[in-house]
Length: 292
Length: 313
Ligand SMILES: Nc1ncnc2c1ncn2[C@@H]1O[C@H](COP(=O)(O)OP(=O)(O)OP(=O)(O)O)[C@@H](O)[C@H]1O
Ligand SMILES: Nc1ncnc2c1ncn2[C@@H]1O[C@H](COP(=O)(O)OP(=O)(O)OP(=O)(O)O)[C@@H](O)[C@H]1O
Ligand code: SF4
Ligand SMILES: [Mg+2]
Ligand SMILES: [Mg+2]
Image (cartoon, rainbow over all chains, first blue to last red; front, side):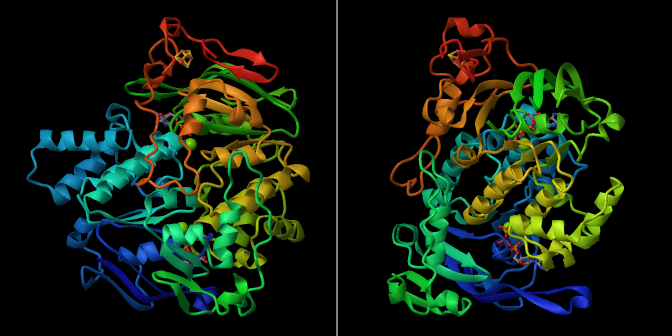
């Protein structure tokens, strides 16, 4: 359904765009219908940039991104099928519109013939699905809602569209554990009805809870990807191990074991090709065997 | 004693009536203490942060006091609060990263912010604090849009503490960071405290495991009120409030899969803060609720430093 082939993104930075920064470097992966792929990686590794390119909000520098066979591009038809929810809920809403208006705009654009009362009922359902109380949020402006309430409003808005693919960039970062699980379960139900999700997260436990496959990104490149159980159960790349060691766990002190640092990947500044040591499990590491 | 909040009530005025986002919250924070603040989304955590720094036009205090280092904070006097902001109490707002002026390079932006407060930049100090949170000095020559979310977040953290405030309120500062950056930033915050850049801290988060690692004390709020407050270890190992217990139960461990074991959130939703029903606010969702719960449970000290608002704790 969604397919990225050798996608690279370079930004011009500095005065007059004199320097360039490779934010995404030769990334390829796919998301199938009914599949959740989680994309994890350190801050600045290019996760949101990938999300924005998939939604056609930023052009790729090279490579291709296709959805159901055709290149992604902005436009109503495309957004009927593909929606993105971005990291920062506070700047994702127009501050002058109340929540009701936000939903009315979805109706005007995509469901003009749906009767008003039917639409109202759908909005209410969508809100309850994300554990929002319609009466508490509908009459409010964005600044009158809490971070987690805004985040859930975004989710509800995207899911009203019966989309095929959702790009979810840190969509549960401001939700308490209980609400978060409810939202994840909701995504899991939609997934079983065929929704594909690119789930960008820093929270490995949430990633494993939902995703069949995991892509680990570092400095714009994929360093490891494969079935979630294999990537986290038997991580091959030192960076994946480092991430796992950094996960804060209750009842357990932070694991300070210095990650394996001797891999050729580090020595050569991270330009390995992907090797496939077991079917479907890829790793970028020039000398895989000596790191294990 | 660095901070004393007593029976603080801060409401938002709306057309439908007052939203009682903080409805009688009391707690103390000692010098050097890091207080982790957790609770259901929408329960009033950011409101507490905002109340101690800058109330927006619709917020008003209907009761209570805030005393910082022996001096009462004039929280509803925007002008007088100017003497306290940044110097005595500083806030890193939730998603502060969208607050950076996009048209200025970071270096200029920092200089302007400091100048507005009558201070100047010490480049060496600035860079060493940036290094503390893993930001290279080159970042100073970039525009905010050229930084990733997490990098901006860390930059705001450095800026907010440049004037060594006595109290720092960090609202979800790590929620957008990957685990290894998160660990580095959390430790940097501890380092900020240990180096005296900030004296004490309120660390608002949804990440119980993370806050357990860095906070001395954890306070759990529910619907505008305190539910439980205790040393971090006690909250995690021997919580007494039913809400705290259920919240801990809904944490997934790495490795738990939906397909193998479906976790569930706490059934039901929190009461409206417009007109909350009398009695315990967790009543509709509480498995232990009984008749006495129709009355407000008082905050009681079960053990030294262990406060709980529940009839059955
Ligand atoms: N518009 C832009 N112009 C120049 N550089 C940019 C731009 N947007 C992003 N970058 C750079 O690209 C890199 C990747 O940024 P991106 O926002 O994709 O990271 P991320 O993985 O989403 O990080 P985070 O977890 O912190 O959100 C960063 O180094 C960032 O500084
Ligand atoms: N300006 C406002 N006007 C009216 N109600 C408001 C306003 N700002 C916040 N609220 C309401 O006050 C309550 C508390 O909001 P607050 O932002 O403090 O929550 P929070 O605990 O920080 O939540 P989150 O974890 O989701 O960030 C929420 O129910 C919110 O809808
Ligand atoms: S006071 Fe009653 S309803 Fe409230 S948490 Fe305790 S047992 Fe539950
Ligand atoms: Mg991002
Ligand atoms: Mg908040």
